[in-house]
Length: 314
Image (cartoon, rainbow, N blue to C red):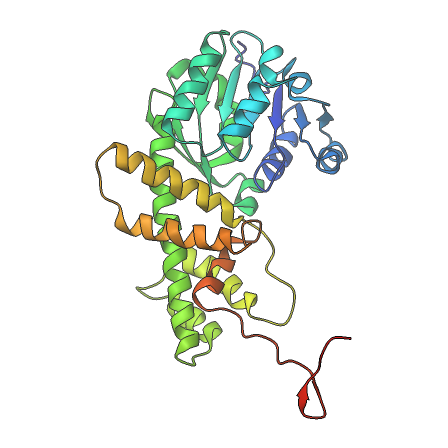
């Protein structure tokens, strides 16, 4: 393990969060990137990163490996699948797990890595792509002092707020689950508010602009509210900054660990059902703000008429 202030770093996963994190790191550290999408790799290579053809190649010379994939299945594949990083990870290197996967999954992953002599920092991130690119993320950490020191230069570049929750992988995931409980419920509440505004004949944009500054406001209402309004515009759909199916996964983690802890979470459970309804309606890959359309569907377009009657397809 090296205490070098510029550790050789690999970033595996260049999605909505991984790409801006890799961009942020590559400006300061020697970075190798891997993603299944060649175009995303090329984008980072053009900015100074080194490209790898597999997770194993990315991890071969790395002192710190940042995993920024969607879920535990992708964590398993990136680390332990064919050409996974575990094939080449060096003893005393450190894997930084930034994905939200839940406490048990993080502990299981850390245990398997420990058998290889590899350290784990459980470090789920929050803040969105823009803040990721600016090094302004909230990162909650479960790791011992040795692993934390090894990953320190990378975490310092990514986080404006770094909270060490406890010494074990899984501790960070537990706090991140509470963060996601609040975030998921706030988005669902914002959707209800905008749906009710539409039902009462109010201008949703005016409602958002007015209430986001008051006691009823929240970060999610101010951030998702305008995108929910945009969903009903005639123009393009809102940019996908956070997929709806991510909250299907995350709220499932919340309700699952709450059940294990025998803690009732009725609001989180209701929000989870709303996201499941959205996913079932084909919104899984859309921005999570689109969940508002489950509560207040878009008005159907007026059918074209021919001589006063509805036109029939020919």
